[in-house]
Length: 353
Image (cartoon, rainbow, N blue to C red; front, side):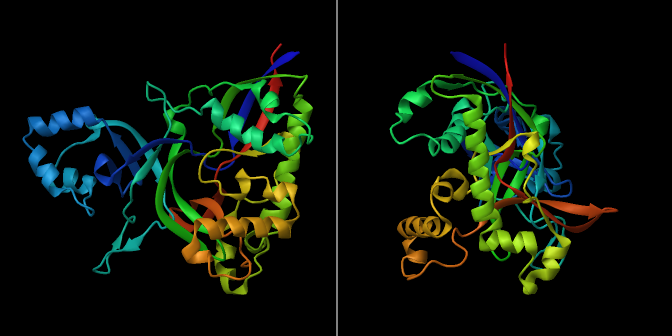
């Protein structure tokens, strides 16, 4: 018998579903003082440059150090907002840096920007294939050995999500956390925490039941939390602050890694940037030591220059938690950072009669 459910995801961390488009620094405007990225309408922008006889000047200046905000505002005195499609706040790891003259500047420069997937009208959404893939990861290990998985998942139908308001987007910088935080020059346009995303999911209860799906999600997260978030060296550092050399950093920063209440819905990881461990069955289907060995073997194959010469598994394999960061402020002053897991969401099901 076919049953249909309304599924609601609530983002607990930034969720990134890439469009495949990467904007160069001259294709968007980064307003450093306001920490906002303005996405320009390229048709309007090109037309404006042509009308003002600035196209040749603009193209001649574009290089790896080019700053579109500086060019438009400081060099040309152009009011650019009429050329903007929409604007997105930016969360950077460092909120203040020094330039080469030792002067403090409001924000470090940004790099290329990976955009979130949108429909033909420019509205963000999550493809049904993304949620189906995340559900599939959780369900797979609960299937009996003689179960034909293709037959099971052929009866699992997931719609694209309802469209999402642009106000729910925010740009986050990629942060890998091992013993300390390592910000990387990779920026993603993400759904920000607390965003709700709605789908419709249908399946035939001859092959799947809601209880089986919920149990699979619960077990998957329990294994992930116990064996990696809590049991791994990195998770131990963040949850307990065991490295004295980083005690000051741990005191002023907070980490959204505590186990959420299962009464409010199961936990699922979805989208890009969430990390190897959250997308595989290693830490669910095997004991922690074997899972670490398997992960290390994969890393050696993919990154031979770094891991190929290592004879034993390093303590921090898998290498790092995949995080994003929000700054904590008090009276307008930055007091610390709040780290969030990429791709983490709460999922709830409501049967449609």
